[in-house]
Amino acid sequence: GAVVSQHPSWVICKSGTSVKIECRSLDFQATTMFWYRQFPKQSLMLMATSNEGSKATYEQGVEKDKFLINHASLTLSTLTVTSAHPEDSSFYICSARGASGYNEQFFGPGTRLTVL
Amino acid sequence: GQQLNQSPQSMFIQEGEDVSMNCTSSSIFNTWLWYKQDPGEGPVLLIALYKAGELTSNGRLTAQFGITRKDSFLNISASIPSDVGIYFCAGYQIQGAQKLVFGQGTRLTINP
Image (tube, rainbow over all chains, first blue to last red; front, side, top):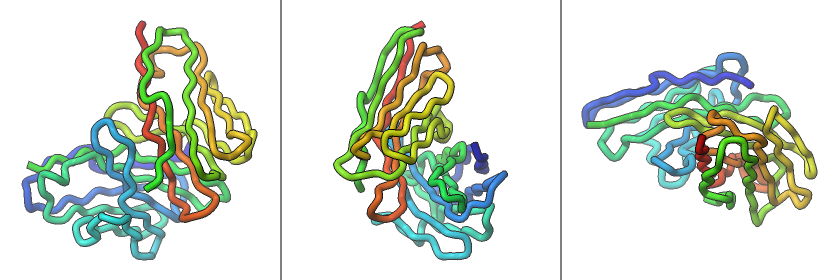
């Protein structure tokens, strides 16, 4: 399957700081990228969908000013958690889908964010 | 948002046993995807299904796209310790935005 990388794999930050998470599709061009959040023992919750060169579409209840998403190229999307607070601590996972006719969606390894 | 009904929620089996889990929906889906997630990792795609009735295998894993397009199952034969993890079904609905809808997951535990 296609490979999606995420960096960093974990990050600890102080409350009030901003954190940027990178997501890259390594061996295919991702026309659409997705950002998910996952709480312990729960399924994945979609936060936003982004298409290369376009503004991200956020799910209801997700603050777009807090979770800034940039899909600058067909292989890179970034999620910036601005002014992070302890309640933002979570497991963030990106996913990418290519332009082929198939709907396969590939996930990154996730980023564990802990806000102190 | 809508979720798929995935069952069972958890399974405790002996090594070597076969495993079966399924997902159902009240809506029609045009794609079914099965993922496995290990602790602290992202989901890994196991099998993708695109046509009603399609039966696809990946090693000891077999999945089928239900004829009604409202369900799918995943079977694991002769389970081994590395099969431990959480299995998610996911799919795209025929109508509506092309967002992946997820099941709640099946947590598989294997007793050696």
